[in-house]
Image (cartoon, rainbow, N blue to C red; front, side, top):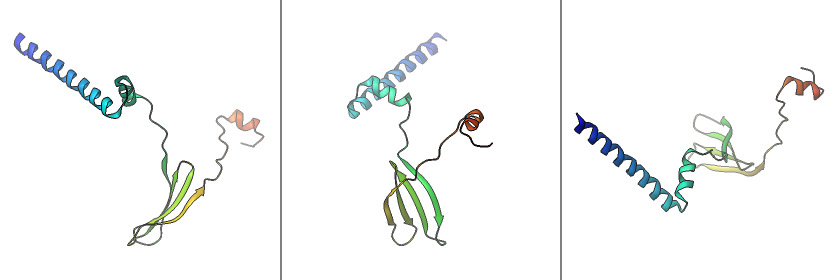
Length: 112
């Protein structure tokens, strides 16, 4: 009975050492401190830089896609013999004002 528990503890310690070594190698390859590599795993995710804004079907095969990257939009047509960038560098429209609560809505002078 104690033999099985002893071997399970040894296997758990070896698994922990293997995971720690994997984090250390990952940090070494990335060129960061191991503590920073661990915080990147569980830390907050960076803001998304790429987003599909709209899609529209042109016909049964082709599709127009409006993609936003870092506040610049690009219009792309896909599905034909060649994917084509139709327009690039489209400025994003200004975003609408966001009102959080009904009280703030009333203070803004707008009917509910």
